Image (cartoon, rainbow, N blue to C red; front, side, top):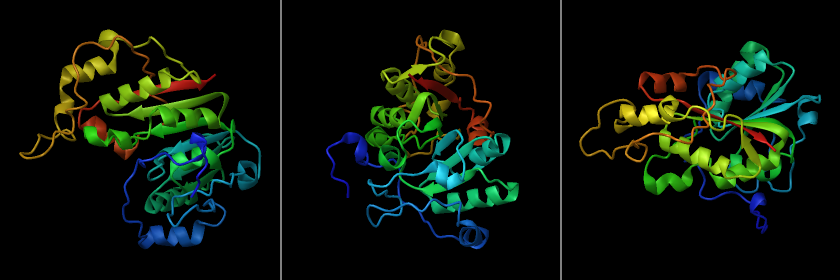
Length: 288
């Protein structure tokens, strides 16, 4: 366990994810067995946890890919839909997919194989640890965090990934002029993301002052009341209302929302948000 006094070199606690089943079956098990070599980053562990990172180890992207190229890192890559699509569209870039759930990474391996991609690597890691020590400073061209777990209940907000400590880590790994892209479908998390990044001297909002008032997706979602339902469905008796903390009122006079990132393929997850009537909040920042 890393005991350094440097806040950027130790894991952020509490972690932003919960343990789920990591058992692989069928095609995913076969993919892991047959495709891991050369595609799955062999991360030295700091503990028995399969997502931990030895703080003394650094990832050599050039050696991993066998070339020098701009590096894009996606945190929480899920089933690999976004990273595989982007890698196919941009063969001149290298892509690193970071995810805590092995089944998701196995599915990503399947997508890599199906598309014949050579510019994607995957790593099973806790992002906070990886960004603190594993990824070299100023080595990332773009860092993506799309639809992280919103942890709706107020008492669980401390588990959210994107907060001031994460913004520091993002600033550590992004090169000068590097881009941080964030997206969520929950308004109060969007406000938290915007507040943390806007407050950091390490970043500038590329759309500061844009989409305010009636043009703001925040104003629109507050007016719609859609977040007063759970997943777009009526609240069942006895359930805690997931959207209570998200629901606001009035007008958003700050703005700063980016247009939808065209490089993000429309995933099944984002489609579900649209089906439920929720708004998508995009934010784009540049490392200064």
